[in-house]
Picture: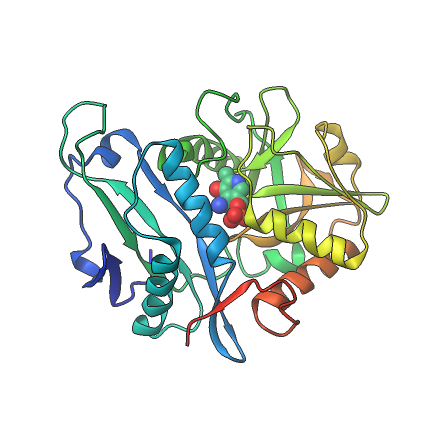
Length: 306
Ligand code: PMP
């Protein structure tokens, strides 16, 4: 269950949590047409700070643009609202879920004429794959569900409807006793988790799939590529065949919610030493260190709330 906070920002105003409701016949409810983001705010020595907020809001507005949704707020207005949201809710660390919703108006599938509503909720949220997962790693499987074909449902847009695929991947994994599933792309190469990107370490090189229209361009993914570059870890983006997962020295997931979670086995095959590997550990420490304000924010990724 969501750990409720007091206020949700809705179209320029703060409304009590319980009042941020929409009608059952809203277009988004019927047709999955809401764009959203997931952003984390960490408690730093200088108070709460939001990690890469601008990039998340840019992705939100790009998702909206693809679906012809006009958002009447600028990124700077949404940044100011997000900062105020965290302060008003008096939370030190939280997850922020910006949402652009096609509301109640039209009956048919064509959304033109339904109002566009913008919401900013936030709530405290711990480690997505469990507290031990960040250290011990998780057991994953290759999903029997594949990701979408490019030019069908755009994978680079973060839209509610895309998460039907994610739900199938996640539910199947859980039903079979795994923490998470890795979906292959339509061409059978490594795609992504239900809500995470996937990285492989092979002979000291960091590998991840390219942005080929079958995965979301993760902001954590981009951050990890940048951190690897800072640390002098060779990095390549290329189509990873499934078997390279089993052959890998290390595998990990990246995502705002999942942060950087090691994968210790895939399809019951042990990955590397079956625990967090040295490169994963190093990247994780840097990533969480920057996010939590204990490692220098050398790329200007933090938006302080106070
Ligand atoms: N892929 C999918 C399908 C996702 O939902 C997410 C989470 N937004 C990611 C990858 C990771 O993206 P990010 O690092 O921006 O959270």
